[in-house]
Amino acid sequence: MLLRLEHQQNNPFNLKIFRFIRPECLKPSGCMVDIFNSILPFFIVVAIGYGSAKIDFLSVDAITSITKFVFYIALPCMLFRFSSDISIGELYDNQFFWAYICATFGIYLFTFGQALMRRIGSAEAAVEAQCASIGNVGFLGIPMLVLLIGEESVGPIIFFLALDLIIFGTLIVVTIKISQEGKLTGASLYKVVKGLIGNPMILSIFLGLIWGQFDLVMPIAIEECYILLSGAATPCALFVIGASLADKSAEKYVVAGGLSVLKLIVHPLLMAFFAIKVFKVDPYSAGIMIMLAAMPTAGNIYILAQHYGVAPKRVSATILISTTVSVITLSIIIALLNGVE
Figure 1 (cartoon, one colour):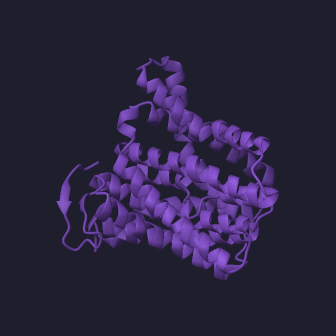
Figure 2 (cartoon, helix red, strand yellow):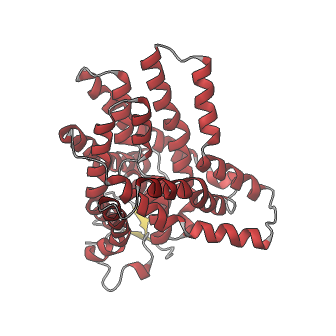
């Protein structure tokens, strides 16, 4: 990672930024094409997963098993490994927190309000708002940015992911429950809290932070084991993203297209405004926030939508469209942040 602060006169974000992308990822000229080529391999793996599922090379049960491996084993090992090297004091940043809240809640409330104006229920409105505001940070953002930028990016990424999971992961379930049941019962609230505590991503981050806080020593064999497993997180996560897209359709494409525009373009622009102009977030963290805000719609929203029977086809189409288009939009946003023409 090249820790060099530069002022880019042609940077539309007007941000004194680091050259985020590692120099070896920008050969030979550091132009827009090289940014695109640095991102493209990640999406090629996604495409391989999509093709494998589409031609039935892997069964639904096999894809489900790989997804479980990533969600419950590989990705938690990666998150534990990274978070154990970060102190709790280093993780929290007040300006970062408020910039995230204002930008993400801004998109959420705008989308929620627009949905209600179309005279749909609050449960569907919450699902649409989630699609426009929560990106695929766990399965795509972490693997992509850690490899492109380096492990220096881990702190801001983990903080961003934790806020996504804790705040908005709770909000969508609570809103759907209230919409469907008329109120939030004690039993429903217990399930929400239990699901939050039992989320392997949140749990692994928490355990890693505690482990690092007390500076505990990991037995060498165990350490090598979770490092080995965390190495499988990136290719497997990208593969299952593609495989999960194979059974998704482009129905409700008008609404899904609008939600994709909000997620891929409006959200990162709003994040840039609050992080840079309003709360003056550290330039390095601000750049990472903008990139994470530009991630396509998170796949776990479809699982929730399908589970509660709330607009699963709309969510499916949004994930499909936003993931496909993001190879272009992410390239542009990362290039702009790096002052690349």
